[in-house]
Each structure stands twice: as C-alpha cells, then as structure tokens.
Image (cartoon, rainbow, N blue to C red; front, top):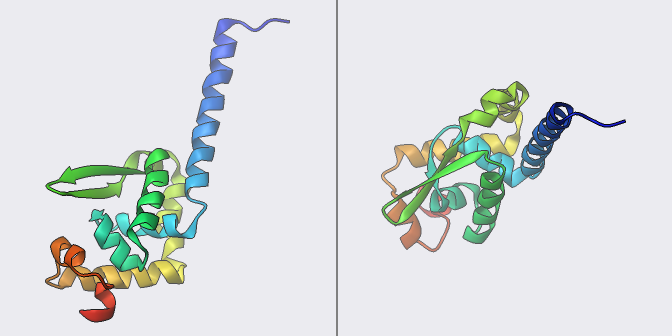
Length: 144
C-alpha cells in the first residue's frame, strides 16, 4: 500500500513538530538552563550578568545559552560589545504548558527564587556590565 504525497507530507509535518517539541524539552532538562530561562523571563540580560547572578563561569553560561538558542527558546541581540539575551515568546505561547512552567512552577524552585532575589538586587544597584566584566570576583559576594 502506497501513501499519497499529501499523506506523506502530513506525517512528515507531524514528525517535525514532535522533534521540535522534544528538542525544546531536552533544552529545558538541565537546572542551569531552567534558571537562565527564569531570569530571562524577567529581564533581558548579558552573559556577564547571568554568570554573576547565577554564580557560574562564563563558559558554562555560554554553553547553556547556546543550547537554549539552538532550541529557539531565547533570542540574542548584540549591543556595542555585549550580547544580550531574552526569551523567545513564540515557543512559550505555542505550548501553553511551557508558559505555565515559566509563570507558575519556577516560582516554587529555590534556585530560581534565589536568582530572582539577586536579579532584583542587581537592578536596584548602580552596577553596570562594565563593572561586572572589570571585576574578577562574584559581584554579589562583594558589592551587594
């Protein structure tokens, strides 16, 4: 029994949708990537801000950002010498359960709560990206 082109096309389209959803779920399967998504859901941030808020090194944060970007969960924009990242709303609007995780479930995670408290401290401080890149230690241990 042979499939028509239309049937084949429908199956292929459904398979691609499932593969994209699996890629999204895989990208969210690491706590640090969830923490990044949580922070970016509140504010557009650069790598140095994320690494200082999360207490991770630059290469670790960059690797996780790459995975999230590969899954189309975040967007990047270059401003001067810094690259800023923000949430890509499309996949979160398309899959309501992802939006629910972002808006409800992450509020209960202790790591995410701590990250948001640090983000709020950072936002009311007079610290800039330049201060973060000029300072070799974690800014939250020394200045806030």
